[in-house]
Amino acid sequence: MRRIRSFISYIIIIVGTLVISKFVVNIAIYSTRYKLDDDLQYRRQFLNLRIRSVARHLANDLQRVRSALNERDHLDTVILVIACNRFEALKEHLESLKNLQGPKIPIIVSLDCNDDAVRDVILNSGPNITLIENPNQSLFNLTKQEKKYEGYYRIARHYHFALNYVFSILGYQSAIITEDDLLLAPDFLEYMLANKNLLFEDPTIWCISAWNDNGKKELIVKNNSLLHRTDFFPGFLGLYYEKHLKHIVVNTDFYHFSQSDLSYLKKDYYDPAFRKIVLGAVPATLDEILRGRFSNGTILPENVRLFYVASVDFKAFAKRFGVMDDFRSGICRTCYHGVVSFRYGQHRVFLTPKEIQNI
Image 1 (cartoon, rainbow, N blue to C red):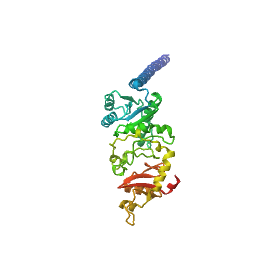
Image 2: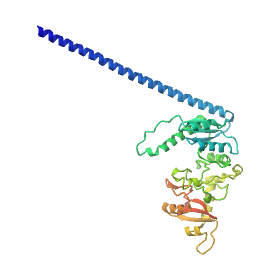
Image 3: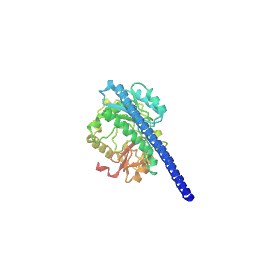
Image 4: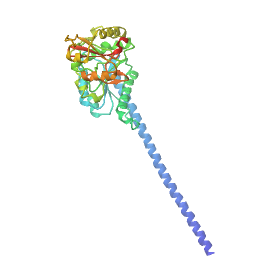
């Protein structure tokens, strides 16, 4: 009987312990669940606040832009500056923009990188300059192989935001795009506005560029009015800075492009004239061009033509003259129908493929 009571007591103790343990576990589970719910609620509130903040930020940006441009709604062109974190360069760039000759075109600076120093420069640059900011600063989900291209992904995202803002939200028809490290020629705006109509009149022209990848002083033909068509979208890679970029010069002589007939740049007019001048240039060898004389001692004429057969030939000639030698999708920099023109001494050289007759 005593054993039975002891056994019953043990059972009661065990059951009681289990009940207490379950109660404690329930409290722990409830406490953990409460903390998780509380954390999730906090995160939701934070995200909602962040979304509302970004929305207010964009709304304020839009309002400031509309207010700043309210008196200039008749203009269909805007200057769009792409900026990141180079505040000294941007300060100099904005000064050169403000000093351009010509009509006062609204200037919008699109800021990426969330840089306070750059933001202050923009906000203190005057009433004609408006700031917009890319709200998307999230990280990219990139593979190890793609990681080295992260800078390009960021630049592409920034351009997408800025161009969409200018064209889709503000409704401009055209944008003059500059970057924060560029120095501008005094006739930059004159050139851009004078050529703008070509974009709408000739579907084979995709953009107007004031940049010459081969714009070194010793390679430029001394003619401020000389404009070219090219199959290569002008642009630069940072790796070429020491070799090429730092030697490119800014034009300082103003040319009145708006007073010139630029219709000759349309494909139907340009191609026949281009073919005529290239085929009219006298063929010469590399050594003859370097000496300035033919092998018989005769002085070379002003326009000469140097043939290349393959890209390896082009690269060898380009390096010898200090011309950009790279290709993108089979197209060499600054070329038109495979032809690259530049100055060497007193001569204009046309670096020409053998199949030039097919133009």
